Each structure stands twice: as structure tokens, then as C-alpha cells.
Image (cartoon, rainbow, N blue to C red; front, side, top):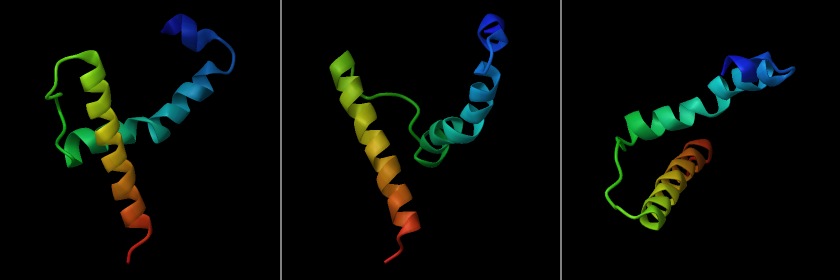
Length: 67
């Protein structure tokens, strides 16, 4: 990781991750209480992860567009 961060421009990209990517995983784990997958095969886990991400995005849309 030190070698990656030593490259020019990569430290700035890594700092952006804290405000763009990490809150998504925090929301999914804490607010949606999703900590482990219920299915076993890789395609099944992939589809389950897509479902969780879809739920996350729909909840964000609901918060920004109240009816």
C-alpha cells in the first residue's frame, strides 16, 4: 500500500474514497444490517450483492424525492 500511495496522484484518489465509497459500505452494514451472504455459490452471492446495492440506491432515491 505504501508503494501505491507513493505514486503521483494516488494519495488524492485514496482520500476521495473516504467520502465516496466507505459510507456506502457503512450504510449497508449498519443501517441495512447486512453482514453476511445467505447464498453460497459465487453467482448467487453476486446476485445477492446486486440486490443489496439496488435496495441501497432505492432508499437513497426515496430520501431525495419525498412523495
